[in-house]
Image (cartoon, rainbow, N blue to C red; front, side):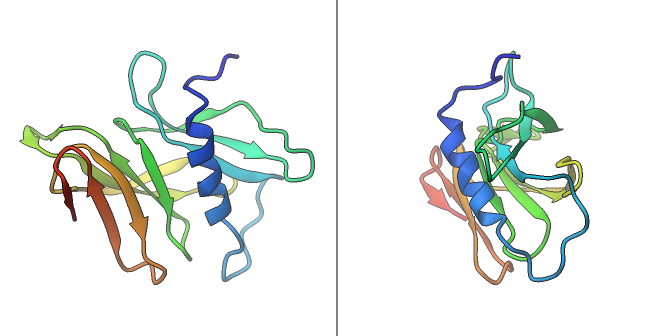
Length: 150
């Protein structure tokens, strides 16, 4: 199966793997290997966020599978202590209003699948980056198209 999106997203995905380091509590049982998430620009060959498993011993990466459908999730970040993944939806319009959005998903550590929690406006067009502070209480988003931070 060909890789469903450009390899340039691989580095961004590895930053998500690194962020999924040791949880503060014992994790539930899960399949072997670290979860690796890939954000994409959606279109004909991509439908949202993809997940694969990385074997830390061999470096082997499984074929990516669709974790959840969502529009142009170009940048991803993990909550520091909870199984929550955030994605910017790098679009210029949401629900007929100018601007992009940030969507939160719960992470199923067994399957890697994501379940949508909610979505909020990024208060600007083309959100391109986000970060979750170390307390997990704040998410900041940089809007490339809007030239703003929210």
